[in-house]
Length: 585
Image 1: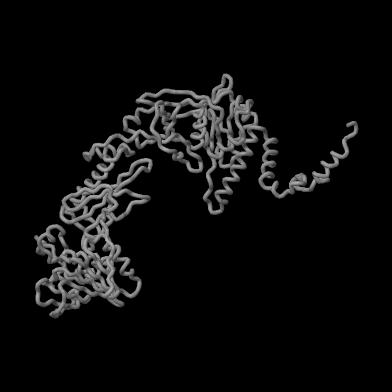
Image 2 (image 1 turned 120 degrees about the vertical axis):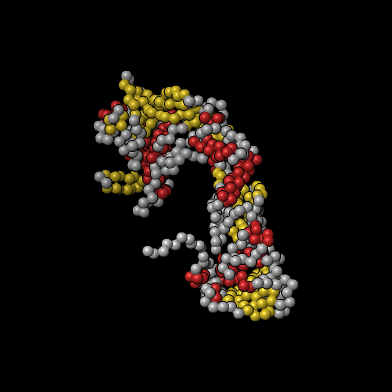
């Protein structure tokens, strides 16, 4: 019988050392981040980066290293006291040099001599030992020299400006020792509109511009991009994210060895909630806000007392087919008698509804803002939640079921293939009534409003649009072709983005011309519309080519075009009329 193993213990395999050159990506950013952190922990007051043709040297004036044995003890940091307690150093950062190898020397504080060693990639992998030499007459601190890569490496100075931008110690760069340049540094939270402290650092509330900065955490110059709380006000009024500037402690941990991510432990989750709370505290300190109701509730869950969102809404503006969204009218304070348009239908329906409401049935119309549902003042407003259309002709009433679908119908009778008589009978009712359903304080009521015009049909081609117009509007000429064609364009025109389609300007111009022709046909008759169409085209495209002192005659017969100047010229004909009056004058 085979003996069973009853206990196992974690250990580091020798194979792991053989893979040491893969613990880091061997890039300059990782190397600088790790060496700068080590210099800071060593109490350095300045760090120098010297770029030579083939090597880069990093030097600091810290306390130096008394025991170089820890350099190649993977996972043993050698840091003690407050540094070990607050930062939990992992003892892995030096291994960012494992693929390149390096030369290192150090003069410990108060020592009479220091040491020097050359550490190759094989040494990092445990394949060879490293001899140490005694070093005299060297200034206090530690220096490391490592080779550059052959091509494809980012320039040193711009990279230092990135990795040392929030570093707490002065960093100097030079391409030769006699001309050092100090790297510009700044406060990580300099853009914050609110700063709070926690046991382990600071929380900043950062306003987002057109987009948020993905860098949201700083660990003594080592920047990270964790997902942190975002809070957005509605109407694009403002948005904020939390950023964290760590000073150590608080139980926070970084994913090892490269330390580019946060460990999702309880301390980090608590800090994320603290960041969210800080954002709401900032919003509470402002005069007004436009938070969605769910965010308002979340603030109260976190113990932040917020007032309700300010009672501002946008005036109602119907969407067009081109954009399929309502216009962004200026916000205004909700007035007495306000009614919210909470109908969420197609542009055709919304355009026709807007025309019906232009008659003044309501004094103040506002766009729906669903994010505010739950606020007392918003829930108390009257809201139009549904609209249907009834065509009344004598004693007959027909309910319109759909305005813009491919199978628009009245009482289930499709408009596809209607005869001219059917069209004449149905398209000219005595009345058109918009049947509104209004909801307020949990109760619903109906309201009927007369209008003079609605549109039905699919509308991809303006010729397909079927305007329904009351008899009175037609006989009293209450509509003109410009108004009707504008309504058709706003309700139906949407440019094609097909690769073979014309430009947007050409598509819109062609649709506008077709919509105007359709409007003229409906309002003044097909023949008159055709004449107007030809006249308008001639005025737009031909008139400017004709001499101002000549009369041009254009004859189009069976698609053949003939053009001639009328004889005699205009001024000669006028002179003849003046000189020779007609008989009997």
